[in-house]
Length: 320
Ligand SMILES: NC(=O)c1ccc[n+]([C@@H]2O[C@H](COP(=O)([O-])OP(=O)(O)OC[C@H]3O[C@@H](n4cnc5c(N)ncnc54)[C@H](OP(=O)(O)O)[C@@H]3O)[C@@H](O)[C@H]2O)c1
Image (tube, rainbow, N blue to C red; front, side, top):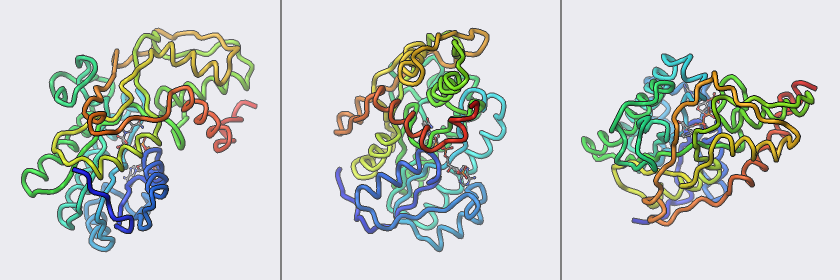
């Protein structure tokens, strides 16, 4: 069912300073939305039920794009599991409950492809959720996010709330986190290659064996998909959002190397964990609805590196 949303509707984007939230704000502005609602963490800590309830009572959002969360790469996930669990549980519990109590027309919740089972058959279909044990390095995050997806279904089932959820693959792009301690694989690689280039190091070390396969979607594509789903998707079942194509970590490192620092030699640090062997989404359902990604990987890496150079001068010159 297609229904164009009134461009003057009050649309709340949670986590609007983050990579996903900021891309959604840019996308909505590009598409003519004039009444966007946002709040910083200092104004609205989404873990606090009373504050969130009061905010919803006053702001009365009609649509919610829920892009706030505590996210990170393997290292952050495996060293801070209690924090990942608590924050993500609370953040969706408060927002979904307030969106029911101060009724919104529709809410879109974001899951993540890393919450599918570790040994999930590939490509991963929406029906595969909860069909096997999770990847141990991000189990706390996955469990918390799964309760968010299920909560959308429970609110729909018990109260008739129009809550839908989407399952984005690994994202990258503008406003990414390039911190080597807590970032995802692609921004970490971009920063590592860049630091090696500044330092004149002949080698760049990559975590793990290089064999795991990863799918990557540019965050501007994801934002367009979120708007598309808000206007075209009404099902209780979550829906995958990805490219349907993957590359090995070794291929990805070679591609980043070509763009950032072609002289560098790649070295694989096999003492570091690989994480899930393969994570490719089956995107048949969203393709059938009529959505497809637009930004190819090499172009996306080039523009992301350019953004990094222009917007993170302190980090991009850290070793000068
Ligand atoms: N990044 C990916 O590859 C990826 C892939 C699939 C799904 N997702 C999902 O997309 C969503 C956003 O991810 P992201 O990559 O955009 O993360 P991000 O860049 O870290 O942004 C998260 C945003 O949430 C806000 N936030 C966190 N805790 C908060 C709290 N207690 N109260 C208010 N705001 C809070 C942060 O505020 P501050 O600015 O104050 O920190 C930040 O603006 C998450 O639900 C994640 O699961 C991400």
